[in-house]
Image 1: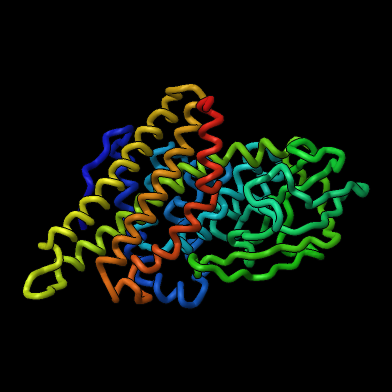
Image 2: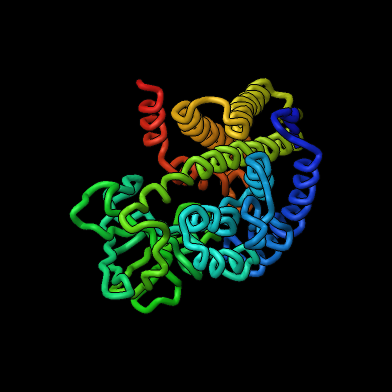
Length: 389
């Protein structure tokens, strides 16, 4: 492996100890099986329990719910180390609760949090977020799924799509419109809907990448949801969904850099072993330049991400500036991933086109990283607004 120099921003011996334990977990419990899981289109549910025992699922959640304290640097380590297995599908579904639970943790009632958060953090239940709709994409404010009050229940009708962990989630945090008179962000609420609810149907979606992550199209047909499952105030749910996007995007950026590193490592190992016309590929200038370009892009993006994490941790910079930097970091990180995947496949040649190589899988997964959590175009536009451009 071509190890990049360590970054000094905010890391302590506790962080490094966690990194080592997580790296060992990934090497033992995930990496040996990713090809098999990807071809099967799933991975064992038991992995959630193993991750929970390590403290991985509860990282950053209150101890009262079975969580483990952890700052932004711990979260970056999770993104980087899980990516070392070279399989984004495992990471996407294993950590779907990191986008499904934050609205509940931030805005939910004490009763809801006590009932639903602990079993997820123990790896017994799977949580997912259901916001995206067939006609909406990143435009959350245009959602059409409705929730109409009927006594002590809401009646939910509508559809959600591209839902990570959608096929086997036990609980969904769902964006609904409770006030149809508002066409934008106003009138949106957050509901917790259990997976076994009558009237909820799921259709599995087949994807270019992330094969072992179950992704679903959800249909809500007269689904009755207790009013007690309302997260926060009625018609004020938009904020609950938006406030976690920054953390999600920073994690995606860190993961993308790590996937780029996986591609660089595989390409370098191949270039050193592959001999053409009596000389290793790694001794040919054109290949060496490709490898250096890959390393440079990873290092540039990674340095920005870790410096940004330091700024977030120390509240250094105004909110608009930090949001803009997070958007730019996601663009820079995912572009580095895409470039490294492309170059790695090129260096591996025919072998890079074969299923089973990490670079081939990451090549297919690069696009979802550039789209998920806010597309590259949305990120640039949001950054421009924050910077007053």
